[in-house]
Amino acid sequence: MEKEFNHIPIRKLVLKLGLPAMAAQFVTILYSIADRIYLGNLAQGGGQALAAVGVCAPALTILNAFAFLAGTGGAVLMSSSAGRRDQKTAQQAVNTAFTLALILSAAVFISGMIFKRPLLYALGCGDTLYPFADRYFTICLFGSFAVICGTGMNQFILAQGFAKQGLVSVVLGAVINIVLDPILIYGAGMGITGAAAATIIGQFASAAYVMRFLLGSKPVYRLEIGRFNRRYAAEIFRVGFLPFLIVLLDNILLISLNSSLQRYGGDQADAYLACTSVIQSFITLASLPAQGITTGCGTLYSFHWGAGNGQKVRQVFKWVFILCISYIGILFIFVQTVPQVFTGMFSGGSSMLASAPELLRMYTLGLPALAVQYAVVDGLTSMGMTRIAMPVSLFRKGLYLLCVAVIPQYWNIRNVFYACPISDIAGSALSIIVFFTVVRKLLGKRSVGF
Image (tube, rainbow, N blue to C red; front, side):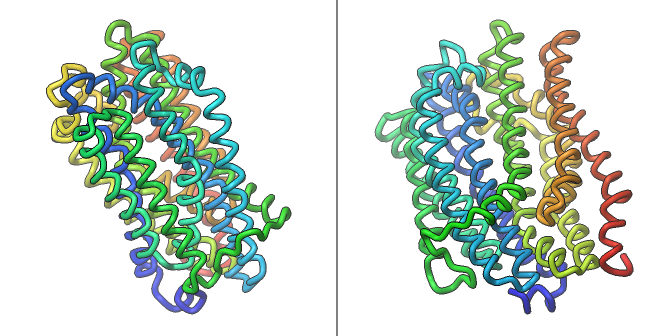
């Protein structure tokens, strides 16, 4: 790990670590997109099932927030310690993070089962959608362990340079999910229940692969179950809190949008929620692979920052941004020119999605700005500079919430879909200002040149 990071050019390392991590997240998206495509094309109740999945999605995605709390926080601690050649701390980071993941998964499952009904209604679910949402949410909640431990500990596979193995763990679960979806949804006639069952079976398969690899002989820092250190746990929470908060708030943004549509949408509320479910799928398609790039390359930020090499950290920022903007830029051109190609995969002829192409185009007007936000905020997080990264991230999210609250008061409810581009563009502008006025100075203290 140390020899590779010090001698291979940064551009090649970013491609080596970033592309497989991006592909892994891209495959992860197939979990939700496959479910929604199959459900949206059901002969009866397809629109309601699609809307119900969209209502449940923010709460279920929050499971990833807990995964990143333990996994990203632990991986950053491991990588930065390795950069300082502190092997003991690097090893303890793996062990402690796993114990934290176990505790978090148990707490999330119990809380979810207790507060399920009020939670679903708070997410924007109405009486018509509740039976669908209840079945889907309950089954998916049983996958809490698989998501938090599997996704969280996969960060340690990626951080140690095993990008291909990290990709395999995700592909395994996605393939199982995609194969089982039509069998359970259509063949067994289980509908939305079958979609949820296929999802958690795939998630457990991924988690099993991750555990087996980390317990094996290939990783430099192997998982030793039962080892826990309170001091390292506190450090993991400190570093992992921002990725946790980002994912948590991203889903609160979606919840606020769903609630606003349910409140002001009138007799079109369920149709808007169905459209939002499709829009969420596309935003996930754009954001998760981009975040996969920054996560996969997080160990480069951490290692070189820990080693005191600011010049190489700058190069990581540069090439991560180039890779992110290349991917997101292609999707932006696609969605602004032919949005109906994407939305058409979900419709099944349902009139509930008639407005989906137009709303999707509105919601994604600021999409390229995400590349700047991810490169800067996630890079700073990987370096442990959460005091700088957090206000930048919170600014964008706070502006989104403000737009969702204010726009329906004065304009047609459809205009609430402009909340995303407004906050994306403003957040990107702040990220650029912070990078060139603050971050470059801090990096300059560690090296000469740009």
